[in-house]
Image (tube, rainbow, N blue to C red; front, side, top):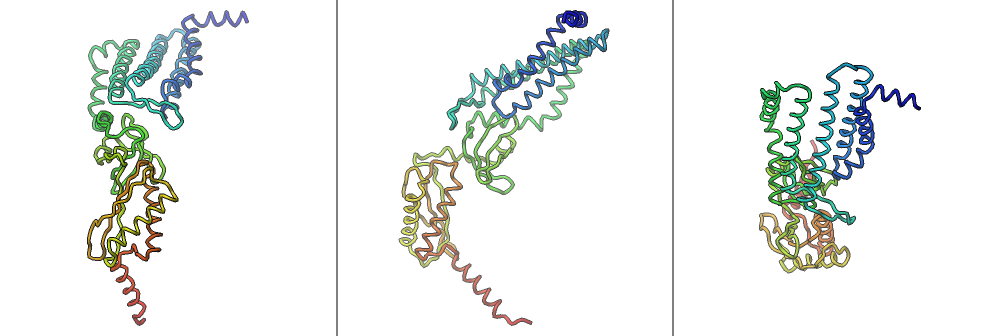
Length: 359
């Protein structure tokens, strides 16, 4: 044991031993540290990055002691890796306190408090990350002995040129994300509706990140990632921010024959909603539906049924339940929901095809 200690003292300096010991401790403590500082889904990536930096520091110290004893570059590389590591660690630490101070606290269904970003916290985090990155770059260049390159502005100029050339890819998303957070048009947990590729999407906001927004598609029950700039271009309808105390006012459309009067149609709809309220209980406050004529077309009258709901996350399911009960009541009331003239024309066409003699 004494020989091993003597060997270590001869091979490694006190600084090397301290660096190795601290790196090993931080390597195994990376997961709890990152879990405390970050609660989002980037936890695995951050832990891996911290451990890779620890591993590289350990390899650089060992290589300098056993392989390249007189090499002057490796100690500088080790110091640069240490600077990068603590830059990443301190950036996460500062952003954690910024999020706690300027973020918005939410309590989920499990009674756990989550802190989400706001316009202030996101802007300050971007500023801190940028400043810490510039400090790390300048420090690493000086440690590596590139003072002349730094004084000439070559390294920073190259970084600035790269950012200027690529700003069309990242700048619109960052700016749009800040605008979305600042306007508070849609926040985490809100249900929004927008059109994408000709399709109407109803989704719940999961998290607004730096470059994109993660949504939970309520129709297909999967996660949807939309660029912040594209989300603003789509035109967002926030269904969670309804103006009436009754809730969100929704509408169902039905094409019914001209032969049925308003009293017949209204009575049928009210009976259907009475059955819904007795059986399902999907409406928190059972306000009477509003039945109105939406359009008088060439084939049928388009009737609009307006109703109110407050649990907007059950919007699609509620529509399906309402259609099911209205369909069942229409059959009982002998009021067809099929477009009359189109249906008759279809039957006449089938009869004509059957009556046509085969050649």
